[in-house]
Image (cartoon, rainbow, N blue to C red; front, side, top):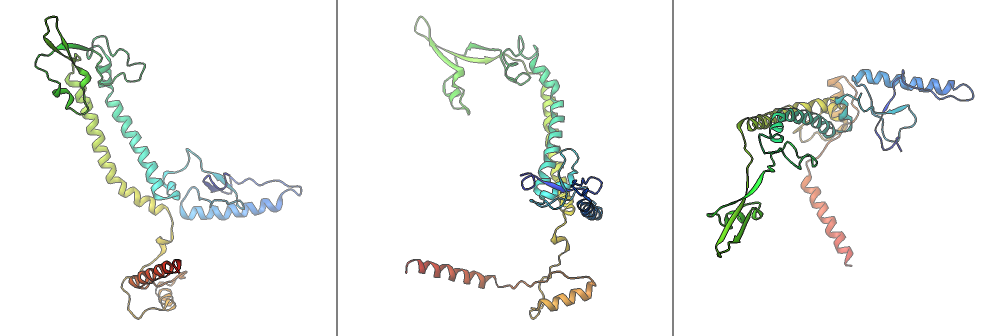
Length: 284
């Protein structure tokens, strides 16, 4: 299971453990040592701490990626998107933690008696202590209030409006009013926290482009060693001729050379013809 589903990396020579056998395990141990040495040289060439093993690898010694010791740059082994996700998760956690520390004075004010008489009664059990919820609420008379002033808002707050009749049949209007006193300094700390989060996320967005390039450079793919020639001569359609040209110019070995013809319209027409032909066959 873990050799197929879970991510694993090749083990270095100093970490490789050779199994024992009845003949002392000499042949197996020697084979594992040579294999680990080859991949140690490969790791040194790529400057990677770990080299990812393909799913199902059982012939060479592998181990699970460590949780705390895996470099952030090597998360690109699982794709640039995975590396950016964990990087943004780390950065946003730090930003929100700092913003939470900035909000501590405001939370202390809201949970104290300066904001509401007797403190925020009943909110400590629900984990809402320190928020701006007001628990000091009382019904007061409001002769000029009308139902439409409370029901037209979004979200509706009709439960804060009430009517009743007096003994002489006169209609009395009441509203539920908050008596919490808001001061300037808690709002200032909340504004600073909001400003800090906004500026930090903006700067991180600018840094993400550079981080994406770093992850892409850390991941070796065929694109890093490929050359694409745009608008070649119309008569240059022989791949072997291109291979000989690149070999002569670069002085290096050319592994693969292919030519892509600009015949998308023809391919789409042939595909449409095939679909219509198959459609006719279904009704014949």
